[in-house]
Structure formats: structure tokens, C-alpha cells
Amino acid sequence: MTADALDSGKNGKTQFGVQSVEIGLRVLAVLAEAYQPMMLRDIAKAMGMPSAKVHRYLVSLAREGMVEQEGSGARYSLGPLALTVGLAALHQLDVVKICGNAAADLRDRTDLTVLLAIWGSAGPTIVRWEESRRPIAINVRVGSVLTLLDSATGLVFAAFAERHVTEEKIAEELRNHHDRNEIENHLSEIRAHGIALVRGNQLSSVNAISAPIFDHTGTLAAALTILGPERRFSVGWESPEATDLIEISSQLSERLGYLRKDKTTLQATSSVPAKKISKKNTRRSKSI
Image (cartoon, rainbow, N blue to C red):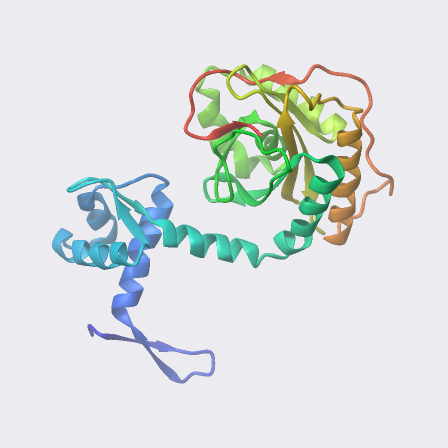
């Protein structure tokens, strides 16, 4: 069958689908699972289809913005419409609905830029970005994926998310001149304080504080982060901004059904030096 595909619905009745649409979605699934641009021959191999046939689907998907090609004969990757669809799906999640307005409120209270991130297929992904009245010069926005070990947001996921979720990404980033023992000690400090602090370097000059948000199962659902330029945002465990962030993230966790055993808001305690972010280049975003 070429134009239509048969399927049995929940009520047992035969349902007709469009086979070409299903194949097109399989092409997108292959590209999504790869996490990087792919050559036509590799996409065809993954699908078990002739390259010529796959190419026709890629042409149609590219026309609609679901796929894009770097150049004639070059690799294919997901296009802008695919990002829009993915972000729309993320925004339908309860955590984004519940925490989104809180991000705007926190921006108004601190006059600093605030972001909300959740765990996506490629790592910590920004789903809400609330710019302060004095924007910072940093090239990230909604949809950007952040590093785990060089960003305050990523460190929250590395510290509080289940290790089987993050271990592959952690191992990948540890190959970039990180020391496993140093990182594990730093993650323990973050768990003890309940927040992650990062001071920017001379390149980015951006400081950031990030806090975890948990759901009713106690699983990390999101990270709420405030960031601003070093010259007017001095990060610290007991800073007013850290106190506001801890309070709001705790309230959001409770709204998601999370119950703290001691029923108290986590407070920052002793002073531990914040991590100085490294200056090496990376494709993902550092500092925040």
C-alpha cells in the first residue's frame, strides 16, 4: 500500500492513514535521534530505504521547514519548523505552564534576566527566557541547549537529576579537560546548598545562579536560573537574589506536588567558592 496505511483503532475499527506522512515522520525521527546533521546515505541506511526515495522526502520536508541542508550535497538536519513544533510540545507540559509566569515575576523582582530550562533530548534546554530591562550580550534564547558542567543551569541537572539520565552527557563533557573527582565534589556542594553558582570569565562576563524544581515524585522537573553581568550581579550563597530564587523554586516545587520532609525552605549556608567557568570553546552554551 503506497498512499494509505491501515491501522486498527482502540475501538477495533479500521482506520486509514497516509503512509507517506508516516515515512516522512520516520525521517524526522532518524534526524532527531542522531543529535547531529546526517548525510543522505546514512539516513537511508538507518531507514532501510533507497537513497533516491529518502531524498524525495527530504526535499518535501525541506520545503516546509522541517529539514534543512547545509549546502548542495551536504548534511541534513532538523529545520526551524521542527524546532517550533518541538518547543510547542514543550510549552504544553504542565511544568512550563506553572513555572513560566514565575520566571517573569522573578525577573521583575530582581531586574535580572531569568530562564527556565527542562531536560530535552540533547540536554538542558531553555523553554522560557525573560529578558531584563538591561539585556545581557549572550547568544542563547528559547531552544538553546546548555552544557552540564560549565553552566549553572546544567550543574543543577548534573547534581539533582537521576544519574542514568545525565551520565552519558557528563562522561562526554568530562573528556573536555574536566576532572571527575573535582566535578563530583562540586556537585556535592551544590546538593548541600540547593543551588548552583557560576561566575563568568572575561569572555562572557556573566554570572548566574540556578535552582532545581521538583515534581510530585521528587524527580527534577526543571531549573530556574537568574543571570546578569558581573559588574552589577555579584553571586553568593546568601545573596538576596539567591534567597529569592530558593524561595520561588521551592514554591514551584510544592505547586508541582513536591513535599519537603522538613517542610521548610532551603536556605543557603556557609560560603563556598563558586566555580570559575573554563575558557575553552564549546558548541553548547556555558555560564548560564
